[in-house]
Image (cartoon, rainbow, N blue to C red):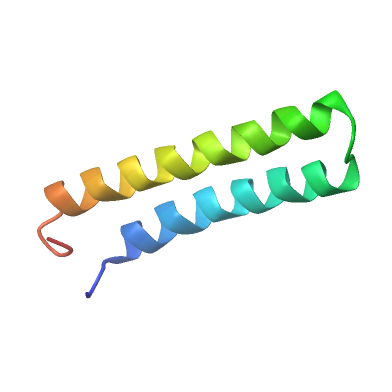
Length: 63
């Protein structure tokens, strides 16, 4: 599937945030903040999927 530059930018931003949250969760294992970061990373993955699906549906270059 060929995608546009905006699709790549959106995906990279979300992946960067997910990576940061997962790293925080691993560094602070056993603490409440780690559990919170892990949950937030999971919800961010869902938001990324929703955002990218919406982009593909609207973008003439991607869709």
